[in-house]
Length: 139
Image (cartoon, rainbow, N blue to C red):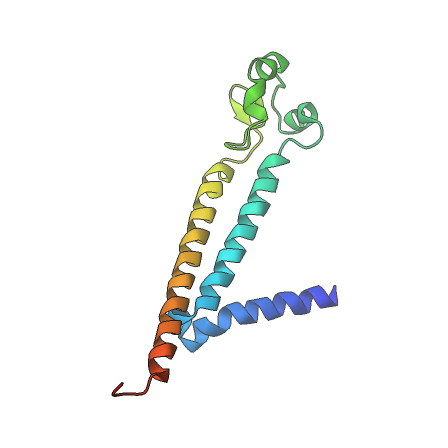
């Protein structure tokens, strides 16, 4: 547990340093790290939604105070096996998957793609700037 705490503290420090230094807008690594963190968040969100029904959906429905409608589930069986949007409905009116899961599964990857694209843009700009500095003036 101690190593995990140190690793988390190190990652938070690496993430916060550009914020406090004020150079986060010019740091390709900072945006790339955010892209990775957003993708990890997407994975965790997907797992939360995928396992919302637990191993026994009927039992989870009863724990949530809802009636498990097996006729509804058998009539809509294709809906529960899809990758997106995630649903684990007890009946026509109640879904065990939290309402925030499906929108989050769209927003986080879009933000990750934007962070990655901006990181690549900053890296190219940085590379061009270094290349131009290495060229002798007057050439």
